[in-house]
Image (cartoon, rainbow over all chains, first blue to last red; front, side):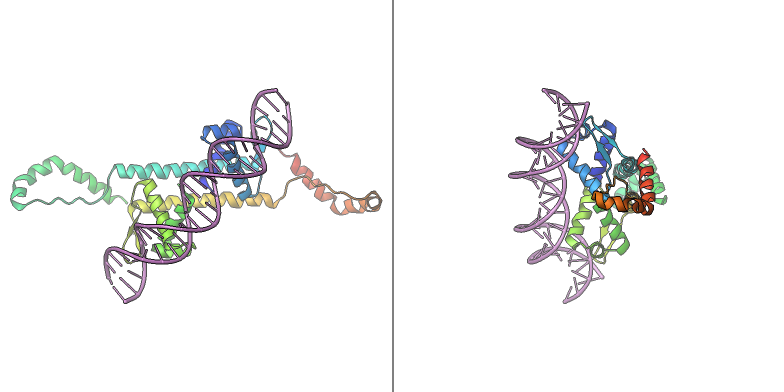
Length: 127
Length: 127
DNA sequence: TAGGCTTACGAGCTCCGTAAATATA
DNA sequence: TATATTTACGGAGCTCGTAAGCCTA
């Protein structure tokens, strides 16, 4: 099953037609029609009832739609959470200084940056 | 994000190496390596730490792994539930018979199969 | 040296868009 | 006739497998 095809189903549900969904998803109508057809073929059921005034989801289509929302939401959650990981870097920081320099700077250095180390430490001890 | 790539991550976790995962998923090692690389590139983080004795998931990798299990499970659920829908076929059945044959068989035929038609009728009348 | 991962590259497949056909109100 | 979906078809992009290279215990 392809995530793309689940998005197609969601688009159809939200716009009420295949052409509307195609427009919303920046696809052409035939491409979206094929996407839906793939999903239906894979599941072995009719998901959308087409008629000349748009389209409506079948009973099975509505069930799959609910699951599609869940799946798409979880995928989005992974993406956003992991991206926030890289915004707040987690790891080990080593600071090296020549002894003669360190002797004069180390006290002032911790005055400035100690809270950063404490924050890192609390993050690392969590899981 | 591709479901296939999430399966790759799961395979790596369960076998402890890229080659093991490739074997498990009926892929070659380079194909699985590329799959993992795609996922890491899309999320912008290192998910697996490779060393010459297999591989292990990073902190971020373990997080994505848990979500991958959830997503894959939900997808499997959709498939199995919808397939159980189609195990109970819904549709229109037409039975054609030559008049001379039908005249003699129709009564007995309905004695045998009438309850099936009634069952279909009740299913079709649902929304 | 052996086991494991990566890079390079060519082939097959999939999916998309354009264009034409079909169906319904 | 106008709107909506489907079919036909050619091309671009993607993913896979094979082969070769690299690294570490």
